[in-house]
Image (cartoon, rainbow, N blue to C red; front, side):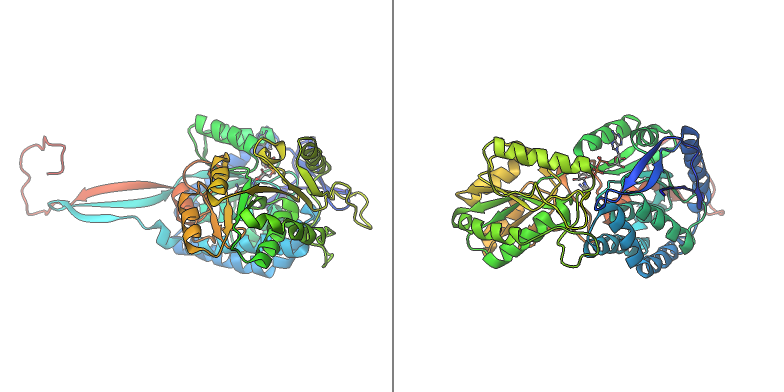
Length: 498
Ligand code: NAD
């Protein structure tokens, strides 16, 4: 029997009045876990109105008190770490270790949110003119909204609401309709940590509910993570409605392998970074550029990938789980077929993958193409499955040109023993997150998540100081105080601070 996912409004789990629902399915078994309601327009309106009311008091809660909420929340998340990981394994299919990583990377952002005070410091100059001082303060925006994707149902909501709320805002989260249970549990734990009513609201649905958030006058900012297609729509609509927006979109991440690199490290890292998490990571390596002699490592890369197999979340030997849905699987299979038609060599084909005991799972085996060129669809499209494309090039410069010609700029990595080449790469590559002998260079939360080009629309990035700037407004105050004993002169006709 499936159950309906409630809305989370004013710290209450509420059954939506909506008759329209979307099934949430376990990707390994194909079984429906629950139905997620498409929040009705009046429920959406109420969610925003209550968040707006809650903002009036939350903005005045002392900063150390907001930090303490985050400290309690961090402790609760740690206590419920494995429970959260198990919930999200059921709805994403992630193997347990991966699911734990999803939760942990989110907890790290909460730790940063607990330390928000130094990032809320303004600036001051005494005596900008005689007896006149200027001070800037950092103030919250109001009601902020977040729209999150399926692939990190714990980490990505936690990229957003803890910092926004620590800055004094209230927040409306619209999690992915494909895996809403982990975000709901995050909300319940936030209530348990002591969050006041209305500070975090969770609504469900898809395009209609997102569009309501993007166009609502009382929503001040929109944080989005998802595909390029939707990201562009969200950015355009939100900014058209004069909102602040940060939209993290799709990716195609390249790894450059120089022939002087440590071969075994390269091979081990390629396997984890390409097919790990079924390739459903925005920072996954989906293209490897083998430079010069490194192209001879292709058979060993193939053999290493061939040893990897997917499986259910609690299978300790499984390297990764199923892809999220039958539609996602079909899309990956279609792209594999297209790669073959367009002339790439398929050295390993995971199209016919099955997993014993799970006949209805969305399985795709590890897949490897060589001889890929920039014109091919498998190069141009984000595949979001366990498929690695290899390109063979003659020189570092050729590899760099390929990476810089890509419309995406989320992450990249280079494997080399040469400091000079590594330095040139990090300086010249037009990608926002660079790993040197590190395959997936996701910055920790005291930095920011800094995708570039078609992987990001906006200017202030997720978490770190940039997120604090995104979620706040600066107010600059210039003041002077008159001594009672000093007689006022005539009217002050000047407007300059002289
Ligand atoms: P998606 O774009 O399909 O969905 C993301 C969110 O947008 C969901 O909440 C969904 O309900 C909503 N949505 C879907 N269609 C919509 C529409 N037409 N109008 C308004 N809202 C809509 O993305 P997904 O499949 O859930 O996630 C995978 C994508 O996310 C990949 O492209 C991946 O690269 C990207 N991603 C990017 C980052 C990053 O930091 N750059 C991180 C994680 C995932």
